[in-house]
Length: 270
Image 1 (cartoon, rainbow, N blue to C red):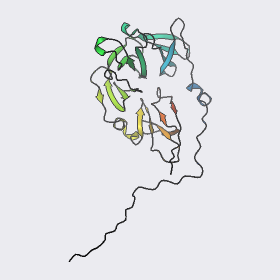
Image 2: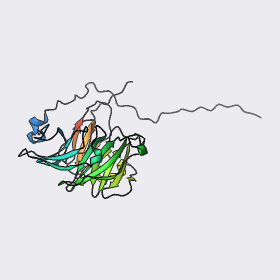
Image 3: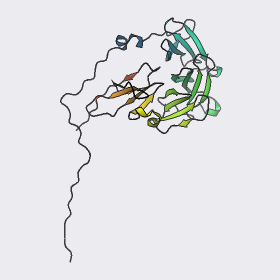
């Protein structure tokens, strides 16, 4: 005998409900000019040194010394500019073959106590590279001296839209194409790191997109609806933690200055 019966069930959505939209949304704070809050945070550098070509800032070498570089329209030369005395002196010049218009463009610069490293977008019409651009990693002593090519960072025709460098011990950590790489400054194979989270110190791994300099790290905490986006700045050991209303930012320049921007309010449509 067949006995007909009907099964019924109720499907419940396990997704937690979105938070209710508050009656008053948070306002983006009005930020004062850096020069009004911290006079030493803003410095003036010359656009052209006496008897030298046009130069532009590339990084800070110390609290009182800025690293300057010539434009990409000529063979690049690094200069040191003393913020106290106004003195300028050359640190080093790229090899003769780099003397060409827009074929050797310095893109990202990092410094440590002993070294200067930078990435360069290179374009040269040599038969073996078929006229395609690529990225190279260069280094030189911080006190000045010979500029030396360390290695290629990309293959032919590969130039990331953005790239970032930081120095970790005797290695350069390079971020490009959504991945992180470790490159020995003394030469050697490029090692792709598993993920940005795994390369960050344990104390800051709960943050997204963490990037660290010598002592300080910058990362983003999980975003929440109807709240302003924030960045967290803290030391590698997790101390001296503070929040900044911003949506993007890189490692602190010379472990002193932060360049943040793009405040946003996380919201949604119902």
